[in-house]
Image (cartoon, rainbow, N blue to C red; front, top):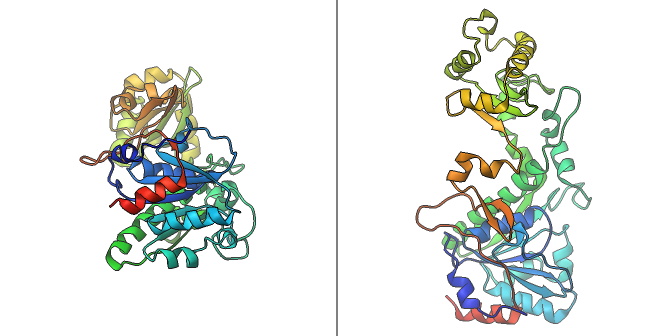
Length: 371
């Protein structure tokens, strides 16, 4: 049954985006994640989903939504959506280019109905270009940006989950774009389209590496540079227990501490920190050193120092780490451990709200009579 307590749902919005109204067209991956972030920060996010699709209201990505079932092939449903968009601040959709236009909900129609509307579009390849209509996934988008070629072992690239394209280059850039457009609309009174393409965002994330390449400080390939596993002082090492630790001792003072705590302070072989030719041999030496103790032993020696050290934890282990637990980085909802809202605000705190089902007519009525 629909939850009719609309005012109560709204009053539970406590974050910095409380009062902002966002219409989300249900999808997968970066779009829902972006809307989860916006909902955590207090936005009133209404998700329009297909009729009959099984809802998982306990899923992490659905938190904070009001979910409405609609048949977007029904003209009456489209009329209801346009009524909703008339009072919305932003729209977010993740269909292939042209789908919203064919539904009668393209930017021209939506902005004619609501000139201040921010129209957020999430795609892999963008709204135009030779690949705009092609299917793809994170791994394909980051392949064309130079990102995937730079990540992995010397022998082959290794996909970094789907963090770089879907969520980093996609969802986060969509959120930044929508928020920027909302700020501008507050001044100009005019909305606009935000074309957030995962390939664009993933390329943007590579800015520093293009910069370093231009300066001669980065070379093509993997395990050749100081941030890609090539340097002995920035990488992951296996311990006696089979678990791993990570070190990032880039700065000279941090490197000196690494040598001190690893018992290598007096070994002259480690003096030329930035001699690329020495890195492979020094990396092998450090492999032997870290294999002498367990991960827990190394935590006792190095954690909390300026070595830039951390144990490599699994998703099951991470919430139990004392630092993560002290900051409540993870929370439990419906028996599911999940990340808490981020970032944190000192006055208008973000919060996890339960998703509810609702009817579009009720929301339209509330939005028309509300502030």
